[in-house]
Amino acid sequence: MTDPALLILASLADGEKHGYAMMEDIARFAGVRLGPGTLYGAITRLEERGWIRALDAEDRRRPYCLTASGQLYLEKQMTAMNQVAKTALRRLKHA
Image (cartoon, rainbow, N blue to C red; front, side, top):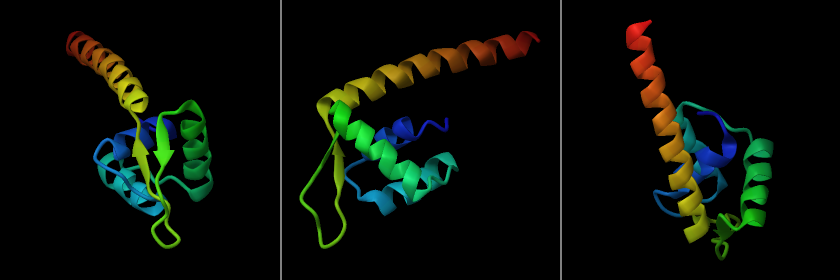
């Protein structure tokens, strides 16, 4: 999975984080390094959709959290991806 939006939502499903913490978390769990431009561009789009929201800044760092609608969207996407993965793995056994 390399979609920045889904990676950010998955990172925030574990709790609020600021941008750098998200980049590090995503690198750990997905093996994907998001650059700052990609990360903050996706954060802006996710905020506009109401899937995440910014919290009060801690010094220079602004943490973000997942909203209820963001959680619902992530659950739907992960369920769909899980179904695709199960199907592909089952088919590979017969290939």
